[in-house]
Length: 327
Ligand code: NCD
Image (cartoon, rainbow, N blue to C red; front, side, top):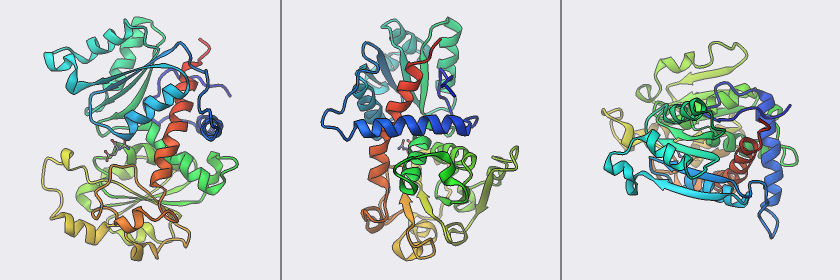
């Protein structure tokens, strides 16, 4: 199978064949990153623009480094220091970068749907610019979902990361699921690859509607829990999420201390999981709230740094695949 997507806006409709292309491509870039010379000429002469309307540390830096390692020219836009503050619209901003011959746009926005609107405008204009969603509101964060998938596959078989490795694995996603685009992208990718996904959060952060997420496909295994223990019992991987206080418009939790007592991931609780359980977090973390420092900093259990590291190879793979479409 060859790659056919000009834009990567979400994982909801990704096929296992597409996951496997991304995993394979990322594995070969991962090898490049082990060399003393960590650069390839794959996107030489191309322009990648990072359009970040919302704050970011790892995603923005990782897209920048990925593009540079593919030898592309990179422009970084940050809303706070841009003409957005003078009233310029998002589409005019995108068209400004189009006029500078941008080939690939990486877009993050606090509102769901902005990367889709920019992609539709590029298509309407008939230009062959690819748009990659780097996180839109509470909708999706496909590159994070893919780097999480790659990280899980690497644990299971580092010599050949592939989607079938996830069949029958139990993966718990714990925390602020309501506000999390990472959770949504991971639900799509992990269930599509055959894992059992168990969501756990207080009811205010895990509405019942989540049960409908995978309802159209009876092969997908998604379970909901309003207590931590059944979700993490015998789990192979536990993914924790940040409490997104900036997106909480109401008081959804009695207190952070109470949340930590009921849902915080600590060493004792992890005894319920498989003995070689691995813990993940997309970052940024609230240490001592969703995860204890002790667990987060334990290299035998925590994949947090590995996730950040793998983000570069995954983003190289995505930019490479989108940048080498044959039409
Ligand atoms: C996440 C995001 O921005 O969606 N972080 C990330 O990209 N690694 C999660 C979060 O903000 O909590």
